[in-house]
Image (cartoon, rainbow, N blue to C red):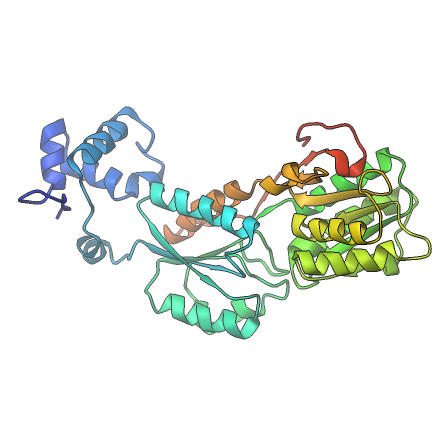
Length: 350
């Protein structure tokens, strides 16, 4: 069974490609149907490159129905995220899509708005599409939605967030990133600091805040509870949290926001209070989104390898689909210093 080429009288077949290259049809099939990639064979070799080059030249398109009948796989992966409109989520999804395409997989994404009831509805909807597996980017720490009986026996991998359970997850080392932010502010002499900590149900916020607070505790400068404010992971939440913190009688000299959108909200609060980040107080964000470097006062931020999170999640999911054990991965962050923390501008440090 082969594929088709638009604008021709007949299909471009795997057999035809094999004959043109003098190869066995099974070799061509493994490469073009993604099996070589899953098993780690020939995907980057000269033979695979020749096969793919000729397939592109001839306009080969796999026949998904034929593939499904042969393998009982749909070659379709479902992806759940809170909101694809968020730049971090969108960048992770780009990595998912790129890696999936390299392995001959199609993906589709659905938004859950971080609502447990919607999460369960969307899981049911995705499974109804007969996907080969799921990449879940909206997990809550308690893992409640993942206890859905419908997920039993379904390969899935978490991305960006982890749970308190043993589900395999691909995340940034958020705890280490929080420690990096603290180390930076300690090095600048900041003793009175505060944290815009994000949502308490998400590991991204809790782990980043925990790493920051641990490092300050080790320095003999524990951060009191009233200096840790939880908020939504957006500009509005960050603005309100920063307004509260910067209005304290013993105003902090530095703020750590657990994502860049919250840090941007903090900049808005500072403006309204007549304060300037980098001069009147230091500000550090997290993720190092493209916006961070382009702000009027460029934002110091902990760099998270967002696209690579998505790519690594696909690779781990492929292991699970193949019946192999998947493992959790913590990708290393780095610190990028800019004007908002009042520090010299520098590269990512990991």
